[in-house]
Image (tube, rainbow, N blue to C red; front, side, top):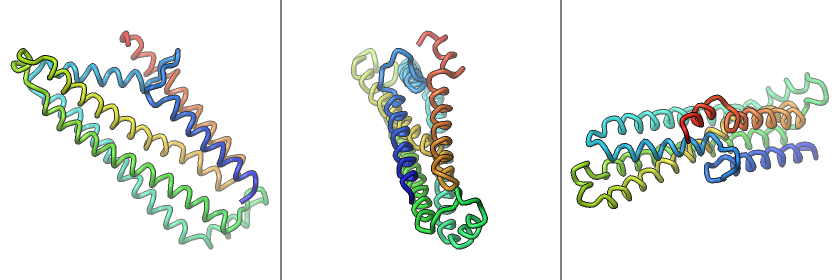
Length: 229
């Protein structure tokens, strides 16, 4: 590990933390993020469920969210397995690196540390996806606890409180899902570290640029703004 490696890793953590802070849905900038707009749509969806007795639509939506979360959780498990396999093939990888120009070479310890960091990155994603799946499950239970339309006439405020609990749980589940997905995206930039710390910085900055554009300048965001949110 060289001084440039430590600098590149520090920049990676700063960019990751800064982007997460700016797009977690609670920060109110002059330019609204896509995450915050979607949180408002989540509120609209669950509040709308107060006006119908049949919750089949809502359960299908939550089932779709859970299936997507389960898919990414399974994917990170395979990625973790690949990381452990890579650790077992250190000798072969070192032979490949030794044939590359000096700027691309790395020591055995440095390589193993980088693979360990990648393993932690995928492990973090897995726990985020796993917890998100559980929270979506809790949200479906809370949705089932929302009173029927006929019962709301007796206690409208209680029904609205039940809906707000489901909304908060759904937004929290989405927050953890986004955190796991963000780590998956940033793992692409992390792979550049195996080539060079400079490639690591450039790829990480590129990934953050793409994610920032999607959050604040994408067509999806414009479409939601046109909806009056």
